[in-house]
Image 1 (cartoon, rainbow, N blue to C red):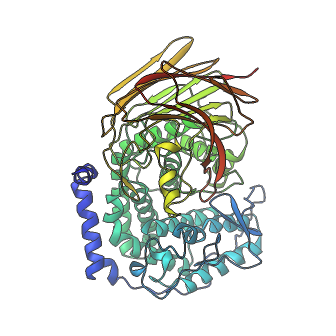
Image 2 (image 1 turned 180 degrees about the horizontal axis):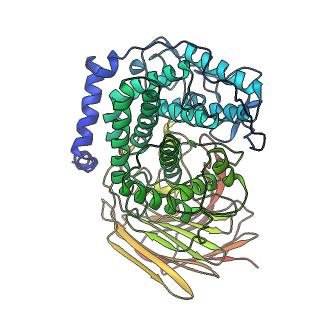
Image 3 (image 1 turned 90 degrees about the horizontal axis):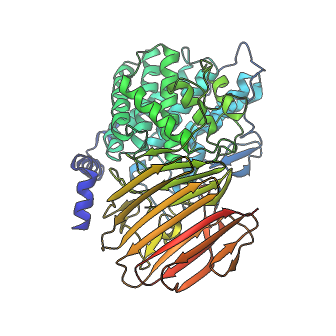
Length: 606
């Protein structure tokens, strides 16, 4: 019954779409199985007649490959291995097999995302940037690597054709590279053939992508819109149909997946950036080709999504809470900004959709506008303040140097993490209380279970179980819903409070108050069977326990309960700020065995 109710929450149409897709593949009747193409060619981009040496290209993919924004591997004057895991060296077997016959999660190879990463074509953007400044060697590498990729990845064999979204990301990156080089309206035949082969793979499985209610639908719709128009410009009859299909689905995804307050269906900061970058690329392409505007509702939702991310980003570092799933995706990498610097995406989206720049001064974020020829109107947005995004279940509190992000359950779409009533607390760019991240979607089972778990968040864990039971790798059951919510702002401070009851009857109500002096959190809990554990995931420091407090060099946490505490302990746990990157951090665990109220005070040590 739990599974049945969860599938009903996913939506009968979505479940039906997934069922038809899987039955079609197994039976051999799906239209995608009949798609045939061949790829040959050596000339995809040509020399720029007038190089622009004033532009600053990124330095990635010069001497080293860059994976997931942090892991570098020497290139040794050759492209990466398209079918090898760069972390382990393991290679995908059976490269001559059609993509639908390959396993999704092969334990011998490890995380397939590590295989896919080089084939997302981030390097296409890096080489195109350097070619735009007159670097002829980069143009040669660009053509050579694309020719090699086509030779080693014949349609539609091997792992790099397995996912429609991965194919879509390649199309979007090729299109943006063409804009950077000024070759969108007069592209080389080999390049258009490459794009057309990708669209022929994407379009038959679009229904499956839409059924996910996530970034797969936005990415594949944008690729069809951009790539379809591009093909039509170069005489491919099916291009117009793909363009119309992509436009319609992109409008649909913006309407369905982006809430009126800007919250996105995936409840994730990094996936929110992925979606927002996708909308930006589609809009940039539309403007460059002089196409009809999207609907007013599309721009309304895109603006709301831009403001949502702006509200969560710390303006000095560009970092943001590591909330929800984080698969290491960063679509539009044009600068040397760190993977965790969200300002380039915010600046671009705010300029395109919100009527003005977010930050307004020079920096990594401003380079996006130069490379993509996006001009603002001189308006610079006000610094972000306290904001509640109730459709998605978020409240951002700001007072002086402090910022708190409070997450409460408003699940209209499937949740990925058990993070109900999680609290991120920042002092300037220091993340005092932080989320764990995701690490990997295909690590050993203990890692897969830990990072999305209740124990990996700053909240209460009842009876050593998760807030929502796990049904499968990417699906949880008994979705929580907030049953009490309160947000009050005064001149001195403001607070947010929310509560829920889980599927076994345990109750948690949390009130968070933020002032310029710090933060006070009051947790009221009841109906546990044996125990409840409050966890605070702390900034790495030399923390020490003193009575009912933990003291570090910069911050102090004092925790008191109205009953005797069974355990008050500093433990070691894990966090993953980057995909496939893991490190330890201290965690304060406070254990009780009865219904009670626990009060935590966080202050700056002067």
